[in-house]
Length: 86
Image 1 (cartoon, rainbow, N blue to C red):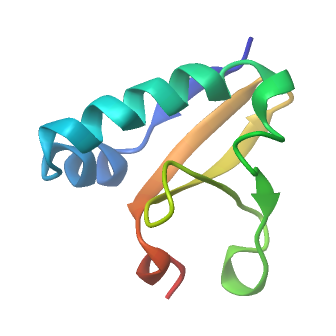
Image 2: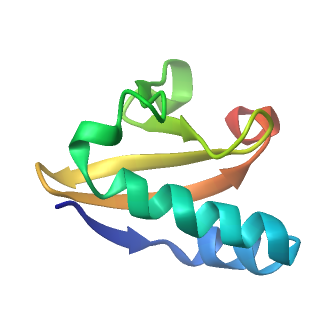
């Protein structure tokens, strides 16, 4: 199981979101903790200035950007629509 750390920016962004979306985020994070769900979540490596990061979809609009701290530890950096990549 993957251990997740939450950067302060990520926590602030989640706290500003609608309650229904936050519930969906928690469901996807629970799925993410098990590596066998990563294909279903469409986990993928990013490029450019985020070349050391990965991302997965919460829904068609919202993504979570994260980085690996170790093989079984990740840090969630930001959450949002495609503007998080800018």
